[in-house]
Amino acid sequence: MAAEAELKLDDVDHAILAELTRDGRQSVTTVAQKVHVSRAHAYSRIAKLQDSGVITRYTAVIDPVKAGLKASAYVTLKLRQHSWRELRDHLASIPEVHHVGLVGGNFDVILLVRAKDNLDLRRVVFEQLQSLPTVLDTQTLLIFEDTDTR
Image 1: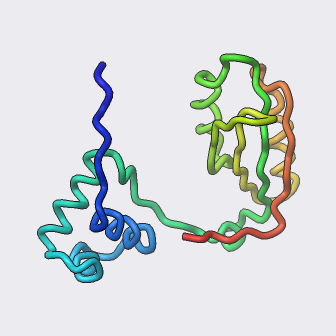
Image 2: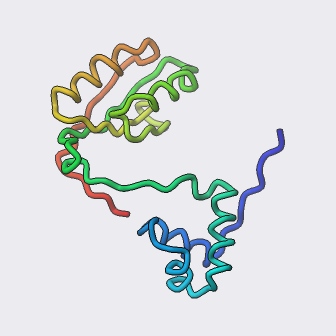
């Protein structure tokens, strides 16, 4: 299978991405006005960004505390060698896991876990993560306060 050619992004593409990141619900007309291009041009650029996989989805950003998720933590995992592929899909299926990153360093994976309270967070870590046969070790770093910068 041939590798996909990387899409070259220009200043207009970056401006469109910045606008959509700030507010993904704004109309194409509004985006076009803000980046100083025609509506048709903005529409075609957004379609190109979607078709090429640069824009992967649109989503709502929630305040986790107001949504009832009062306990958050970064959980690091050390894995058995060569177990990432089988673990990746399982981690994505755990509702409390909001982000999964494969990383280099003293651990292999970092997760953003959001739960309704500390008891629920404990359940996720002890029963759902530590019990996985591919997980050798975990560390839990509680988040006291976090801010979405986007």
